[in-house]
Image (cartoon, rainbow, N blue to C red; front, side, top):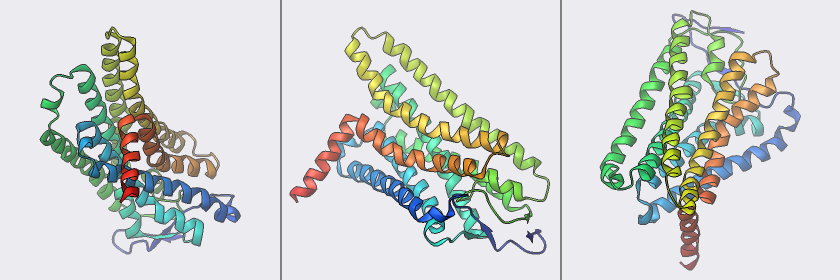
Length: 315
């Protein structure tokens, strides 16, 4: 047990949880996690390397894709040291400062991924529904402004949450129920009034989990209406296929995000393995699946990846 107040002391550490009930198998489980993290790091790094090397990919669609890959890479590197440290070395202690640094980057990259997917849905809407003014509206300068707006929105979303939690005293057990820091998990260790935090978290959940997906659904409803007006069935299938990869990426992000939120609010008595599994899926699914989805479903990206490696072999 430990007691923390703003006026006396700060906690020296929190204790992260591995895979509850399977501690003796942590070495074997680490192989799976190591493979998933490797797929994420290598896959997203390849997309960024191909984008940088191929001038033909410097278009709005692939600019957003590169930002998504960069976000996924950041999300992976934020959780990788803590998770693998627990599984390999049983290093479950995390300092107060390191915990809040992880909080900032974990939630920041999660919010950024949501904003990037929203921006990509707008990109698809413009490309399919308004193809003529597409390149005149989504210029390089406009894309840079959108990227800057996404970063600013993430900072505005995370920083209040960060400072609202950091000012509070913690008491009780230092044990967290995840392999890394989540706001929903740590707020239960606070021994003070968390009304302001809860209200801000509720508003943020409305914006990220509800408003962003609704805007994405709206954009694809407009896209579907436009596609159904196309006379040629081949053109319809081509347009829908171009959107399929983005729809899959949206599902990969928001389904685990909603699942984590639901388990924390409505399934608190559930076994710890349920919470840990949902949290790991939430953090690992987008970075692992997005490179696979976009490499397989985006023909130009797939072709450029093959050309990239073929060119490297010739050198």
